[in-house]
Structure formats: C-alpha cells, structure tokens
Length: 250
Image (cartoon, rainbow, N blue to C red; front, side, top):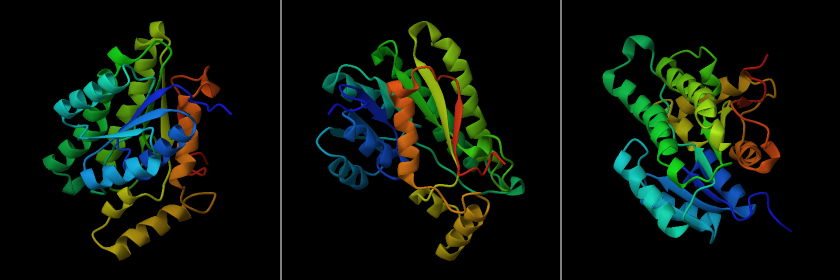
C-alpha cells in the first residue's frame, strides 16, 4: 500500500518534540524520508529513534543561519533535494506590553520570523517545482491574547509570508500555506508560567476558550500538516488553515 508521501523528502524544523515530532512520525509513516532539527542533541536522538529508519536528525537553531546552511548541506548530500518544508520551530512567552524587553523581542523575532524566513529561502535551491511549504503560525496571528503581543506579531508576520511567497513562487508551482494551531498540549507550554501550577492554570484557561472544550493534540496538527504536504491539497495555496477547535472562529 503506497503512502501519501512516498518518495518525498521532508524537512521539519523543531521536529524533536511536540507538533514537529508528531508531523515527522506521520510523514515517515506515509513514505517520506524526514530530516528534523532541534537544539538539544539527546532529545533529537530520541526523536530520530521514535520516527524510525527514514529519519535523520541535524542539531541546530533556526535563528543561526550557519546552522541552517549545515542542515541543507546534510539534506543535499543525503537526499539531493527537499520536496516538503514544514517550518515549525518556534518559541513563545507571555509578557505584558509594559514588561517587554529587547531580549524578549529579539528572541521571538529571531526564531519565529527570521529563522522561518531563512529556513524557507535556503531550501529553495534544493526544491523541485511543485513542492510544498508549510508555515506553522498560530491563532495568535488574528487574536488579541493578553500578554502575547510580541508572539502574536511574529505569527502575523508568518501569515503574511504565506501570501507573498505564494506569489513569489507561483512560476515554480510551489505551494505555500500557513497552519495555525489553537492551544495544543505540547512541551512549549511549560514555558508560559514560572511554576507547574501556573502552567496548569494557563492550560485550563485555554481549554475553557475552545468550543470543543479541550486543548488539541500534536497528532491533530500532524494530520493537517500531512494534508498540506501531500497532493490531497494540490489546489490549496496561500491559505491560513486554523486547527483550533473553533477557538478563533466563533
């Protein structure tokens, strides 16, 4: 039985945990050769083992352009091309406007905006015409969530990239789409508050805002990423696809 991504090569940044790891596992199960990145070697090694023999891990930080160059050198040497890019790596912190620091601003924009842009740009020489680029944004791109101003601005930039890159790359038939999750139960949420109790309160608060009454699961994002990566979405480009249990829709 053939998979939806048979013979394809996929790069997933931040593929060592959460939504990225779930997507990597699903892509590999559908026949793709997957190259993932992450900043922590032990976690990266464990993720590669969990994904299986079609996975390769390259340690690096998307905000570091030399690390991105090294990533694509590995992709070029091992596979010669990349058919799907899931620019998934991102960071988030709750900081009220009065407490925003230059360090907070630079950290979020370096990873979520600069890192994402160059993740895509540096893939293009290796990408055949007709490839698929998926940008991981957030419902924060359209919602005014308290204390999330810098994070939300980065995700609005990501959504804008999908529009402009769709037109930039139209001659090459490369599709660019944004996947915007609602609250998903992943390790990134552990950084939202200084205590475990605070994190649990934040999670409960998010779940209460979702019409489906719960937070999402990483694999629920992975299934939508697979749709956008595969020919199932062959006439879909430039969109922002919300996977949020209705939170930003009603």
